[in-house]
Image (tube, rainbow, N blue to C red; front, top):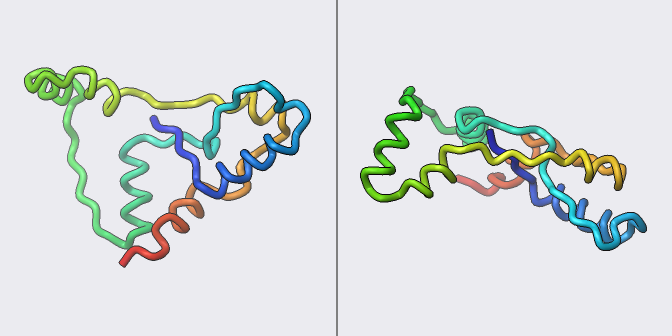
Length: 114
């Protein structure tokens, strides 16, 4: 699972933090509030970019083994591990929620893609 944030959502959160009195000296995590698996992300990207996607299943144990063979165990943990954020503190203290959807964020990211 991966947590992502659209640029528009990040800018909105930064503006909220600048204006909100409870944001002083706080650290907030930022995401679109909806985590995706790598497969879901690739499917959404291919749809957004209007490209065909062909995926195949490979057990994680084999992928980890391949990374280890090339001396890249730490890289395998970053690529294959979970990168989820909990933004409940951000939402509760600031009353903030991402103004645009994940799909809209991806669409805006790739709107000039040809």
